[in-house]
Image (tube, rainbow, N blue to C red; front, side, top):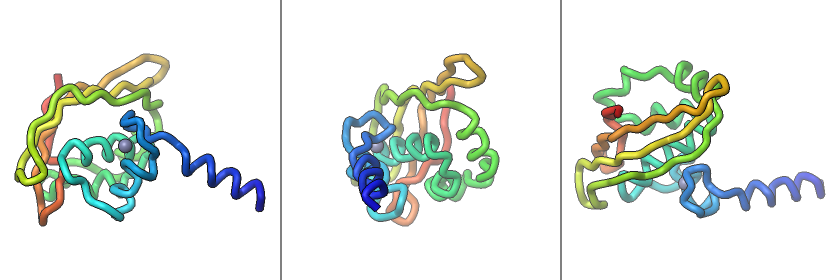
Length: 141
Ligand SMILES: [Zn+2]
């Protein structure tokens, strides 16, 4: 039991994978778990990056806008997310406030794939659906 408590304490203090510097449980995890909602699109973007590092296909599908959800597949997302090693996220630019209906976030996500450092450099479009930010699509560079 002591060992389990110690392990739990370590998990509680884990920094969030999105690079915010905040604790995971104070950052992306509550959004991923549905305990809170992303206030701005950047928070949803960060939570999706963190979900990729967790190979959480369920959340990646959930956070997809219904208009483009059919373009992704939970199993494919999970197997790809597991096959790479996530190295970090950088937000390059963003637009949109909490009250807006659409927003853009441009980011760079680094990952190791088959021994090579790769990146996703994307400008993502987010749109609210039933009051919640969702990922619509992205333009790759
Ligand atoms: Zn985070």
